[in-house]
Length: 234
Ligand code: 5RP
Image (cartoon, rainbow, N blue to C red; front, side):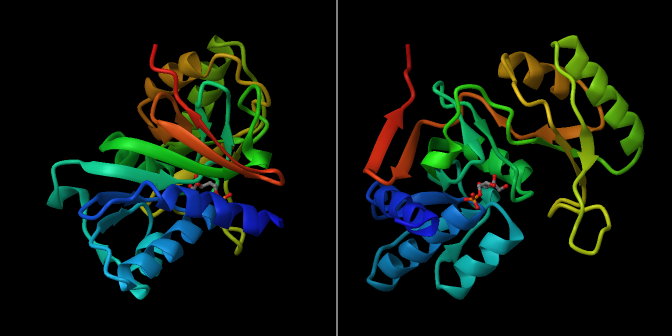
């Protein structure tokens, strides 16, 4: 199986969790896009669901394919969110935001009864951090915020390069919410919870890509097939 076939296989496995009438969170990225495409086939066959997209790109795709798009303000919570991830660890903590959509993704996941993450084996790590952690920051005072991020990281024993994410034209990438992203190369985040708390205290940080306690399950597609890991609740 190619990497793309694995992503499609994970998305197909997640589709089996979808039931008629569900209100879904629709993730962002190449794996989540497979889910949206497969979901659209079911919708064309008569499946009645609605979805809240986590990015402008996902909204465009969902609308093009005929999925009914709603907002979080239209409903009192979602049944299920399906999204990709950049890394996951054995506790099902995630790094997300490689596709620049972490803020909406986290709001949507937090308003869902369940979040199923769809990935391929390359995203499995023992310790988060090889993938640079995306941190969404307000543009006002962004340099001061970057200094504060470095200080917060030091307070939990971490250091590493902090770089503004760039768009293809070389300018700072602007997120769907009009903010910038700082990618933090911490390499080994041994205590993600402590880092998450430290980052959340910084006024200019809107959100960060550490998703802790949000994923209910991860569906991993590998060369030997599909495996599903459920979060331990005790
Ligand atoms: C977007 C994300 C994506 O879920 C993450 O980057 C994984 O993307 P892909 O499925 O393309 O590997 O967090 O912000």
